Amino acid sequence: MNENLKQQWENLTKEMPKLRIRDAAKHLNVSEAELLATKIGETVKLLKPDWADFLVNTTSLGYVMALTRNESCVHERKGVYKDVSVNGQTALAVGEDIDLRIFLKDWKYGFYAEDAKEDGVMRSFQFFDTKGDAVHKIYQTEKSTLEGWEKLKTQFVDETQTFTTPTKETKPKTETDDSKDIPGFLEAWSKLEDTHDFFSLLRKFNYSREFSLKAANGKFSFRISTEDFLNLMKESSRRELDIMIFVGNPGMIQIHTGKIQKLEPMGPWFNVLDPEFNLHLRTDRIESVYIVDKPTKDGLVTSVEVFDNEGILILQMFGKRKPGIPQSNVWFQLSREYLNKNEELNPSLV
Image (cartoon, rainbow, N blue to C red; front, side, top):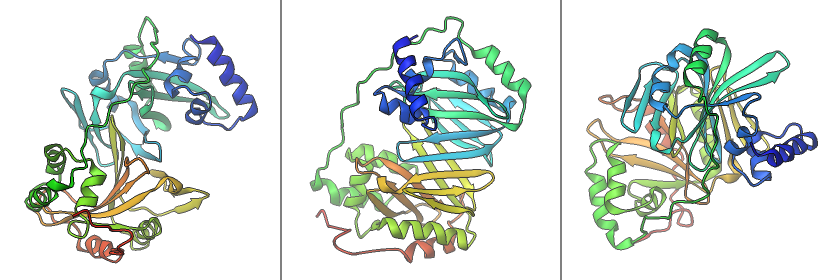
């Protein structure tokens, strides 16, 4: 255990008692996993890295709150883990409430934590990547199955409790921004038959996601302002549309499907505060927003994609749909209300 770091965190907590662990880690220039590890042997236990086995047993936890976030957005969904399957380094949980796409190659650390609260103890399982950044967290609720929590804790706690410091290395950028390939890229885009084929298209042309949307400007993608994006969210709520909101990081994508009702802006945060679903979005970190059309066998599929100033995808929105079923025409028409072909927002790359 890093006693010096532990003491620094305790001192910082006394100065700023409401400071969240993620923000404390930034303040101390360490990872969140490193801070959590200072409590190993007290309120925290290190887990064995048997991620696949752990995931297929999550149903026994009962009704929980699943949390996935990136630097700019937090996605919280309550429900039960159902239909969990693992295939090599990828996994799925496809319940109506908790809907996850999981990429295990980025998982490195797991913890079981117990935090004292005024009304009892808050139990959680927390998972982090090779850099010590949070990938996914599972929190106990008043309707959780305590026996299941105890069983998983006993089954997956690592007896050695040996924590290794995360690496600070970052992956070098491999994408190109070569505009000479844009005509061929757009031609290939026009022949898409499934939204999932878009990932293969990006790999084939070695384009980043944001650059691809710039390349498709005016044809398949249309940039809109942050204000218009927030208005689209509000209008989706007002019309009681069933939508899908995706938030992810390299190790996890978490999806909410349904309506959004209680919207509350608070400073730079735009919040959805519904009983089963919470979203916390840092609007001051939004750099660009695109409405994106992808052709499929089921017709056009339209999404809204939100990026930060480093070109990292913060959030995606779709109208509720399933494979084999066309998207909602109401969602499509709503997206058209916010198209903005202003040249300043939509410069041509060709």
